[in-house]
Image (cartoon, rainbow, N blue to C red; front, side):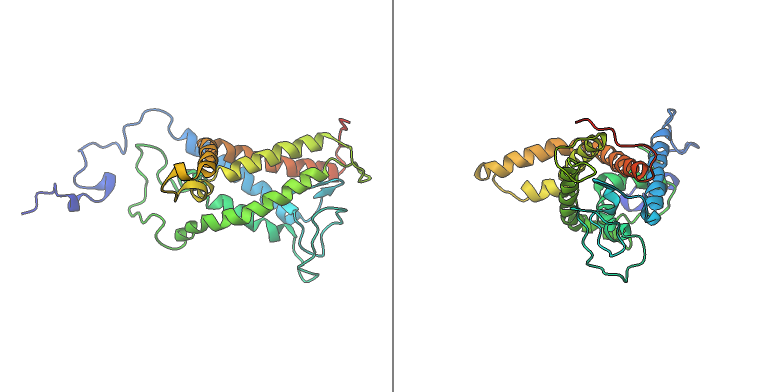
Length: 273
């Protein structure tokens, strides 16, 4: 005879029959909602800004700076970028913004990132909204069904993010030229690009997939001392993955906005030397 205490009968979460007889949905009295609300606000702000800039199809190049949203430029309708990664492999048939051809890769990398999953699951879907606060959904399937099962391709987006980061590194090197494309220049934009690319690489290699690729399947670290040291380095960065995720997200938006201001003539790039 079932007594209602068997493991199989404990269903329904806070709505289950085995839950303690209290009316409150949780016992937290602090402002637990601030964290998910701030996360949702920050992510939404970036989505709105990046969508506007991706579809703008303008003001993304101011010699020698090219926006990271538009690099590499893969369509014929790209602005002329002397010496930059302007590869017209899509020809003239692509009539939309060239940013839409490249943003899918860094966007897919971030959307499937383990930290960002936690961030937008909590911020937008309240799944769960905070620790010790039950989610409002009656059914939970995790990432076992479409479309969330696609989160499992995160490793492949990591592979795609590596060449993108490499190209942005090349763009950063080109910022040491002046508007006449002569080397030996360093402007405020150069510093903006340098900070951005350092954060981009730090976020990329601190990825959980990178850590697993380097040392996740090794049986004996003693037999692979180089990979062990790399694994330790990535592990230390991985502990700061959340901070790096936000810092790189902000830096890439600021980098694009800086180029936008230069391209629209809002001000001239201050020259440092």
